[in-house]
Length: 196
Image (cartoon, one colour):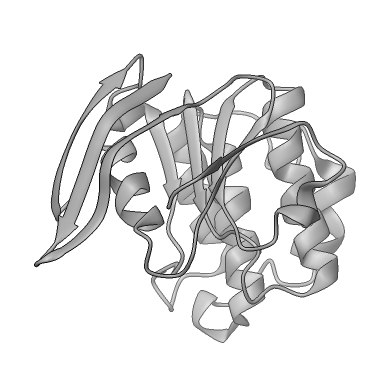
């Protein structure tokens, strides 16, 4: 998957001009850049949901229906329980197996104690973990995570990174994340691109 001649503008502010990047398989593709550099705008473009003025060419990038995209600010229906929310993800992904099939040892200890909790009662870090696991339940060609470990404690950060590692190394999916802490992924195979 490759993006070339990408340019983006927000009002009069130029975010990117003639930028190119390649998304490689079997590694975690990391996009880094300063706050306000346009990382999220680029992710929107790759996912096919850009609302700002952007141009560029995408090669072999799947259609939006084949992209799982986790935004920074995860929005859920606050009255749904964790179980109901994950069931919704499971149905969207077409999965007919149980929730914990692939990663039971990893995710069960955390989900078991919040399973019946309403999403509106979870901490920000817990919602981020549920969102990441929800993306995991989708069967997509490309997974995009916009700062998946921001505002997440070290224990849940480790679980989130293990889920991402599983997507890359076991399911062989293409994964792109943004982060201000690439050192968190030091134990994983990575391909880093900087958006200046």
